Image (cartoon, rainbow, N blue to C red; front, side, top):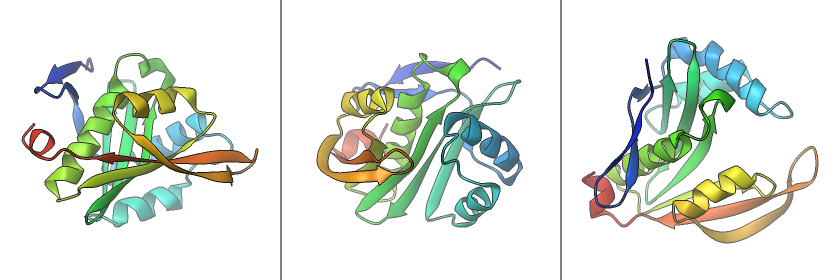
Length: 170
């Protein structure tokens, strides 16, 4: 399966071919990719089971090809404000717009459930993620000093106001 990212709608949201809801059968692959991407603080297998069990409040999507997972993303639906729990792209899939497509899908799902804003935290030293969120229109609300351990890395708390109609109707 070739994963294609293409543009859709007037807002320029990326759409990801092959994107689907995460399933219980994805847990082992999620754990493995998580450990590869976040070796100092990966989510454990019990954490993933707990996250998937929290549906429908939690919403996780994955993209995979014949080799395995290419990326995943998750959202917590909290009413007027939805929180991005994670957005991750496998190293072999980077540079194709997959992260932007995953983020756009989370925003679409948040808007469809009535959220007016999406919030997230990002490591201050994660330049690729910060660039993704900047391009997507997120703004800095506050900084949580030395939030991420180990390393005493700051967390940047970002928010995007969903413009409504164009995201809901995309």
